[in-house]
Image (cartoon, rainbow, N blue to C red; front, side):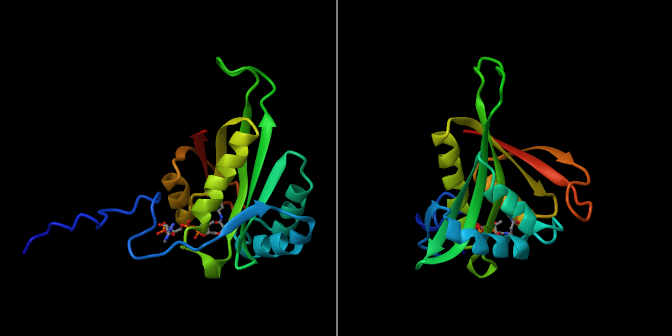
Length: 182
Ligand SMILES: CC(C)(COP(=O)(O)OP(=O)(O)OC[C@H]1O[C@@H](n2cnc3c(N)ncnc32)[C@H](O)[C@@H]1OP(=O)(O)O)[C@@H](O)C(=O)NCCC(=O)NCCS
């Protein structure tokens, strides 16, 4: 029996194209509005409870942060996810770069019933666009070392693992620091 695949069958899904036979969800992404607060707090509380004891408080602090940009993903006018990116000037030269700005992806989430349809990838790409538009030269993030789904998402988007940090989250879980040049 031949093991050759047809010309259109992908050997491995790269994350840059829709997976074979699976349609990505038609999601749009827009800046967060004041009336998104309940959604942002509710989804944070639901998906981040394993990592923080006060996900609602953390989200409210991000909502009040002047350097953060929050974006909301929608499908059929229903909110289904969000991403928070913080951009700050480093305040000093960094090698040849004159006082560069750097971005940190503070939080990303998709409603569990909407996961694995490409919305996370869209939100990461959108966050990178926001960061570039605000002048950032790099993006960093932290994710729990047990959160293999999130790690796959970020590795797929071109992030590299920099270093592990012990005892970062609520139950003492380790975090991985990840980085991408923009
Ligand atoms: C991590 C998270 C944001 C990912 O969101 P998502 O919408 O499921 O992400 P995507 O669909 O883009 O990618 C996830 C999976 O879908 C697949 N996928 C991506 N694009 C796709 C597409 N166009 N069509 C079909 N499948 C796709 C990916 O291969 C990936 O598969 P994998 O789980 O086997 O790696 C989401 O799971 C989440 O909210 N988790 C809880 C909060 C959290 O942990 N946040 C990260 C903290 S740092």
